[in-house]
Image (cartoon, helix red, strand yellow):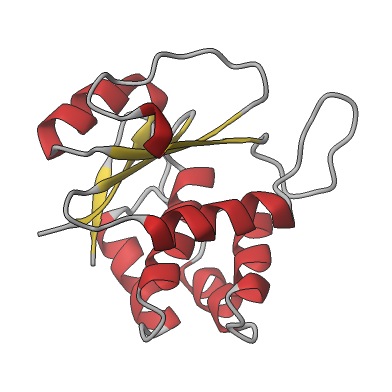
Length: 170
């Protein structure tokens, strides 16, 4: 079964090896250094430099943007789906769950947004997808507000220590 593996930065090597991932999306603050797991090819690793904020960036903060989401959608659509896609951010709670939902809809646009959101909540009780990413993804994927409403309907996730990971099957 292929799907999207979501987790925190500290677990990317373990998750990549365990799930046999060959492609990865990193949503991480500008200048945050980390090592790409050896099983992930450099040309199939997308880094989206952004902070986990929901407002226009100020100072050194970089807000998720239309360019970030366009790059994510293009990368997801180029994913061959023969192995899982690994998506991570710092804690695996906000940016990466949002990116996973956007990627899932990019590769399978016939999904119902509310069913996808409910499924996300079932596999990731801790997920609180970044609303700015979701809103931009909604527009980019022409979901007419349904994705935003669906994610809003599941509410804030449960408190977590940031060590949880999950699989969003496709």
